Image 1 (cartoon, rainbow, N blue to C red):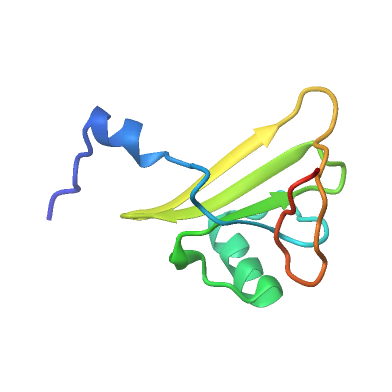
Image 2: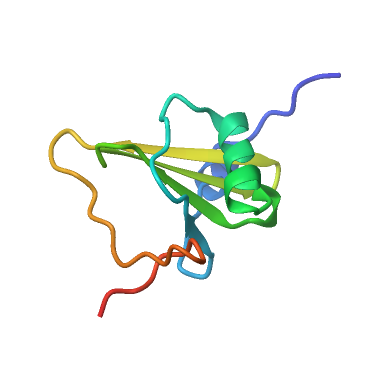
Length: 105
């Protein structure tokens, strides 16, 4: 069985985040050494969600300098990583009961 070769057009369209998706922030700090499989475990065990439903899950480290977004798309998981060279991520309002970002007025 030969591996499937994805075209460049597929590569451009497979990374798509938009404002119609639900975004959930993982409560607390996340060890950024965790990969896709470990983060799926955090989503299931700590947040009570299933990554396969298509939501975007946000993880931030203790120093607020690194952010990971894990998202399931057709064909597999996508992991985005952003590490700031200077400064920190500023979080908007956060609901501890329901781990979802709240819009800031």
